[in-house]
Length: 311
Image (tube, rainbow, N blue to C red; front, side):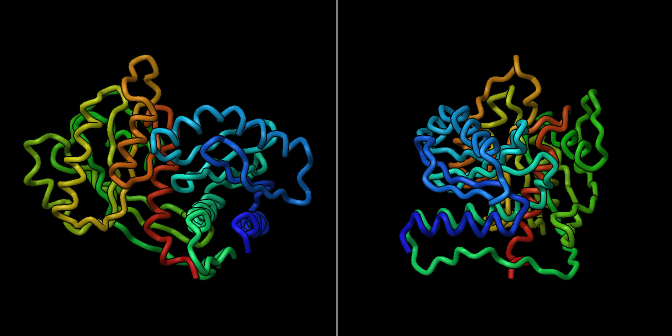
């Protein structure tokens, strides 16, 4: 099969497996290189996909020129929800669902499709374009996750928003460590029991912090989009983690406090570029408003269980 045929067959299988109305693959120029539509989707919905891509045309081109990752973005419009997932250095997977669709259920399949798109575009041999089966029996996994970053970037606030659904305006510095636990449902029958270790970011806690890093399976790196120094220090945080826990720890980079629009000093493109240099996926959040907080921890959960739930 040709590259075009493989891409279209992949999208067709994707639509049949999930609650997806339409899917398209967009290249570096913002142009659609492959697309598939559910037989029940009307022309208005198809036009909504095209319109959304056109609106993001300039941003897509800029992201690719910078060599960064588009990340994962969800936009709600009249025709439904639009999901954009990075598919390597050459493409973005665009998905349209109904306005009531469960995106948390769809996203794991979106990530799988994005990986297959990369393989097809790189012209690897023996590419399987079928959708994998997810284990049907109920499963529960337990993981230790460390939250790393400079002081006052919002690590504790992110955890509190995720676990307790609250936000405290007053800043209280973490002394040593703070541990929070929550069960997170990745899919209908897949649950992750998170032990979330909120580690103090100040330099004088480094020796104690290294003891807490031992045995972790994942990390969330956090910086403050209003403070450039917190972004530049992330390489040091990654080195500290790798020294103690190894370089195979699953990780995600988060730019926090995007609600502070007027105070922002680090652009999405700058954060995205560093994520690419560190080999990490990238999301921006607001612990205050809750924007993308669940998605950040959900993405980390999927990274941890992906190899265990796909048959």
